[in-house]
Length: 459
Ligand code: F0G
Picture 1 (cartoon, helix red, strand yellow):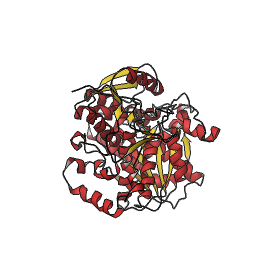
Picture 2 (cartoon, rainbow, N blue to C red; picture 1 turned 90 degrees about the horizontal axis):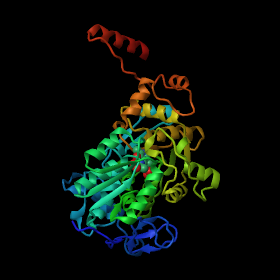
Picture 3 (cartoon, protein in one colour; picture 1 turned 180 degrees about the horizontal axis):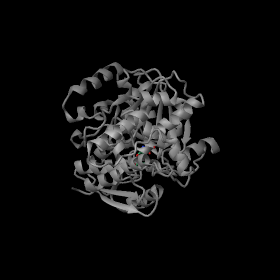
Picture 4 (cartoon, rainbow, N blue to C red; picture 1 turned 90 degrees about the vertical axis):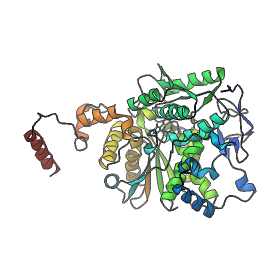
């Protein structure tokens, strides 16, 4: 394969790529996807929606639904079936798809009771091919990398982006470079990137340090960057919001609650809701609220200490390793979405996250720790009155429960230690949720005694 040496070009005619601050449109995209004039992030825009006849929302809705019965790979993808509102590839044969998207929307009745709302739903993005929402953005961005004939793609990651990138690179015939913080990656995620054949570099630093190193590498080697600063990532990720609306028969929920790490995902979902309103597919948008772990709360602090005017970076620490990020790239995009939709930012403790994760599991759904911040955050938003009990709420669950089995097993065995809470107090708080495995002699009497004890416990 020919190795690409120059900047990427904006190949397709259906969209432009613009700076979010100075508005300058870029014909050539720099390797770090930053604006050549002011260095801020870029985003995809569709000027034809304003200038000419925009796509008819009635036609779009029926076309998108119809495609669900098609076996063509692009239609079977829960991302590409929305291709009328995505940046266009010049050559559709470049699309790399693992049939991502099309994820379930579940009712969470027990979690609803525990949060104090009448009805609660979860859009489970962990049900994507590699077990996280990253696949929806990876299919779009990596297809552009392939169209531009890149040999290498790369990302810095807390584990899910890297797992996803490694899979899609392998499918697209590209090599992938994964840069992750040593010792702070859940095993499921690390094992994926190895199995999909990535060059996996574990650096002795955190996620923010990995980003710094990778930015240096891409300046010195022809590599296509697949972090969420890449605007094509967010375009794919936005389809989860469109799919959610479709699953709700285009009835807009009152609230959507999203975990916040590097802050790309909530920005992408918000962009989609606002675009659907712009096209007339819906009349309103849900309030999008972002939840961070207390130990990795730069957006929360930015809002509360600087009124959203300047980022407050933090030294991040949380057991929810997916969102262990102190210097989030997309903070401005995120704040714009929160403001435009009337949402808010909340933070939750490690104990609250662990409890919420077990509750989501007990509803038969399960998720990784970072996803559980949504339920933990919702409880606080109900208590503060921001969410009313009668309002409709959708949590975005971002990662599959099997991504981080170590956390789950430690929790249920009573071996999980959380910061800022004594182990005894944490064990007492979570006693009802914990289901420790019981080791028994190999006979039926022993198992029956365990059954009876459990029946008694259930009352
Ligand atoms: N939930 C999970 C499971 C994640 O993996 C991430 C981010 C987030 C939430 C936060 O999303 O960054 O868009 O605000 N994971 C990235 C990674 C950083 O490298 O896998 P965000």
